[in-house]
Image 1 (spheres, protein in one colour):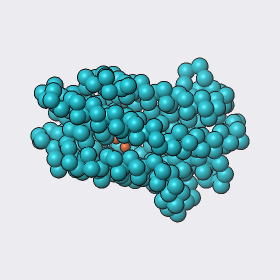
Image 2 (cartoon, helix red, strand yellow):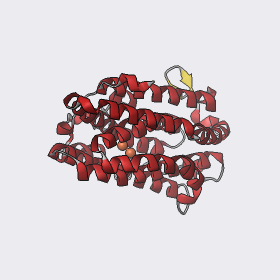
Image 3 (cartoon, protein in one colour):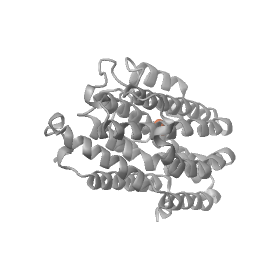
Image 4 (cartoon, helix red, strand yellow):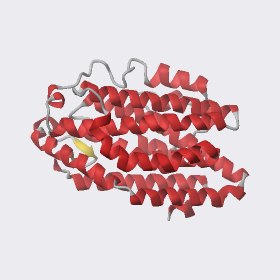
Amino acid sequence: MRAELADWDTAPNLLDGAMNLELTAEDCGIRSWLAAVPQGTLRGRLDGHDPALTVPAHMRAPGPLRDALAREYAFRSVAEDKAARALAYLVAAAPTVATMEFYATQVLDEARHAMVFRNHVLALGFDEITALVADDVAAVLDPLAEFSVPVMREDFIGGVVTIAIILEGALAPTAELAERKWRPLDPAAAEIDRGAGIDEIRHLTVGAAIAKRHLEAHPEDRDRVASLIRDGMRLWTTLPVHEVVHRREVLFQQGLERHADLVGDYEVWPGRCLVDTTPEERQAMAEEWSREMRESRLAYIGLAEAAS
Ligand SMILES: [Fe+2]
Ligand SMILES: [Fe+2]
């Protein structure tokens, strides 16, 4: 893997990288991961952020801003934990050395993401994370796991597609929004998201490349994988994801209004000041990115028809 793709200062943002780069499992084995991640992205950032960035007092003070970040990061920590465990099945079932090595690195990446999100919630002043989001986990993550884990355990290529298209592809744009919206309020949190986003580019592009190559070699699997994707998409529509994210965005809004002075004229995306945005607008943007991401990934693997 080219060093600049994982370098803190030169790596593309998550959406650009995941939609425009092409990386294969052969590009992202253990050796290249050691150079790119422990000795690259993570150099000096073992907790996911520059240690000089401590949590500011306004983020530790009880209130909607702290609650918004704590709920968001606790939820994502649990999601990363579940992903790390389920991905271990892909290590076990990987058909080649290259795919085994790649998924071994992804297991470690996700376990590390679970750690840095969890530790940041603790740094905000909470004792533990599970009670904060038990209801959201039960409503969203448990049903996703019930769908995904059996697939990942029993069907390697189905599992590859499940994690890269159905789970990470749908969640990645929320991470992009998080990095952008927390940047002026909690720079350490924004760095945690930036680092996780750099890893995510690898997960999404390599997962898609493995699926593309497999489906080209085994066209007889196309119908099965397409119907798996449709089932996964249908499941998303039955889950209260919009409501869960909306509750967090409303808390964020209350905190944003209280701390507008810290945010100033910071732009959340080009031409749009964060302080002028609403929960609905931010959420609609993340959902739009999510749709674009899924469509670009499906087109790349040659299953555009599964998008509808
Ligand atoms: Fe992750
Ligand atoms: Fe990931």
